[in-house]
Picture 1 (tube, rainbow, N blue to C red):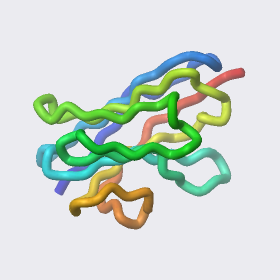
Picture 2 (cartoon, rainbow, N blue to C red; picture 1 turned 180 degrees about the vertical axis):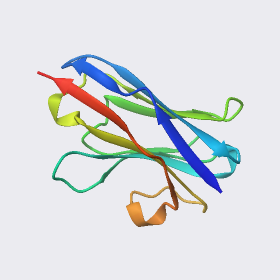
Picture 3 (cartoon, one colour; picture 1 turned 135 degrees about the horizontal axis):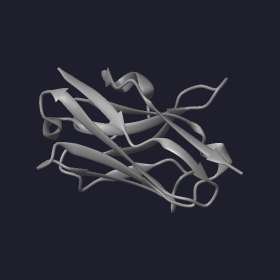
Picture 4 (cartoon, rainbow, N blue to C red; picture 1 turned 45 degrees about the vertical axis):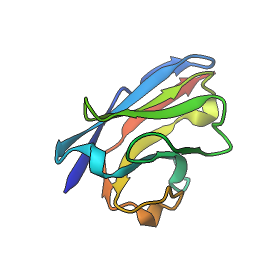
Length: 124
């Protein structure tokens, strides 16, 4: 079982940057496909980005392309979400999730293990 643990959230002004990290308590990340989702108040949890086990393949939501970059370092057992040019509409709780399988997925239901989330707040 992989229990993700997020860190790195905070308060930032519009146009600023943050880097989120995701580690685990338990097994290593390297055997799992990983993803970031986010949930804003009153909204559904939405897909942000996903990455393959080795990190060679990535997928990003249209709303974050060019601003957010997902990556991972299996030697450090960490996954990251680098966010630049943040906007107030990026304000949300960001969740790290993991799944077994071979293909990247945007579907929340495909992910088995979820972290508790980290709050990102972007002020205008």
